[in-house]
Image (tube, rainbow, N blue to C red):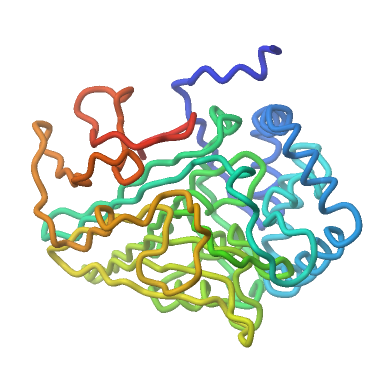
Length: 366
């Protein structure tokens, strides 16, 4: 195996500080992390070549074109940002764009692919809303090829004119990023006091020609309130192409705070906006979210990333126990490996450790 394809875990997570227009920030990301992006595309060559083929001909090309046209209309600034990443990394734009698309092959509604084509991967988010203690914890669990292919971007966006459908001119955010993708799909926070993490969900029906979840999460990095976050996720006029959950905290300048979990699914057949359900985590409560729908009533793939067991539907009903390191722990009281939270056996002492979950080859506790 080539040295560039070895998946030994590195104790390194590079950080880029950058400032400029959307294109300039994207270019800096691509130029700085060109090697990481190239390595990731090489490591995932088989699946990446499959995406290029699917979206390069026939119905797949039609779906690609419709999706890109919608994004150019509603989020042109993020398309320029992705173009900057591609130019900086010296890879064709389409090679990065396909990383953001659902794998349906024609415009319209489709049953999601069989679980045989999907790895058993998934993330866990934990929220604590207590007086004096505020926490949003997240395990980032992805395919093996993503190991060592992540980085952090701290970016200040400065544009002279309002950008996109929501009219953003300035953004200042920090985000953990997958190589070659726009920021926001993992977790991030901004200068308005918005912080969030993302759990991938698997509704039975997905859409091409709608807004990819990556770009809705990218827009979340500009939100200045919970109302703005919900408006972004609803995406009126188009709607989400696929499902996800956003665990959002807003720490306001006046000292107020709000914890919301948003579950998002593609529009219903007679609608042109995302299905969005909101769960409020009140003071004194905790909440755990994995990769299954907990409060949005939508048909879910029968073999979702995580079994929808009651043991993971924490809403503050169970007590929180204290670890030796002084960290509050929430246990999924189940011996079913699919219904447990996570293990952090490879973390140093003093970090949070929970029960074992069936994990993918790459998992991080953030």
